[in-house]
Length: 335
Image 1 (cartoon, rainbow, N blue to C red):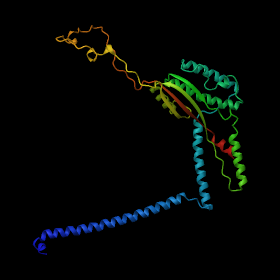
Image 2 (image 1 turned 60 degrees about the vertical axis):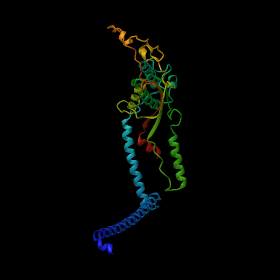
Image 3 (image 1 turned 180 degrees about the vertical axis):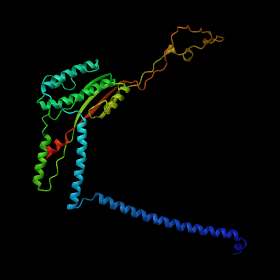
Image 4 (image 1 turned 180 degrees about the horizontal axis):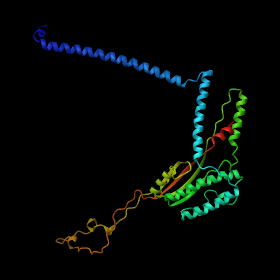
């Protein structure tokens, strides 16, 4: 007690400091308790919300009507978008099977002439079958005619991009070529029959096909710039009128090993050669004895070679040709 009386100012400072520490500790404890409680409440609310989102809807007429409305709205928006895309693509024009074969032979001759030796010897735009036989019907010929136009556009784009050669070009067969044109209708009929067997109110609407995917596979040899131009042009609507997607691209260098180290002997100074004999004692440097080069002297050969970006690449590209179907006709066929 005597120390406090003798040192009132330090004692007051120590007392205030202790009181502040105690008060700060109480505040920190209260804040920690409040944060823990808020975190627990948040976790409980989050878990409850997740359970509600994952829970099945109650089978009430109100929920059924609301869900049907949402499905109808979504189907309507998809139908509008598919109709716009359907009108943007080149349409199938009526063509007879004989006209298609004549068109095919004329296009093959034109593309071979434009190829300039960069196409295979037996190149028929992947329609080899129809150079000697006719399509099954005029309807199939109309589909094949549009398919031919799209493959011709891809081939011309390959040549325009500057590829060195087109080693291979293949296409997938249409459903009408494989006698599968009526497969969607058969599946829809089976779905209707299955729904009718389950009873009223349980049949789900059949899915509407709004796209048809056709595949074109090409193998080309090109340098880096030509390959970049090709991939960019496939995604450009100004270069490609059809809807194309480069679904798979595999690229490899034709040279699987690095370039050899080339000795440039004559282009290097002999003084840099470690195997060269040392100059005799008292001899003058070679540079001092050398005479100036004649005005018409040839420049020395380069001692370095650019390698990156100049390799020849071999690329396999799988292209998806997306054909949008008429949504109104597809919806009518699924009913």
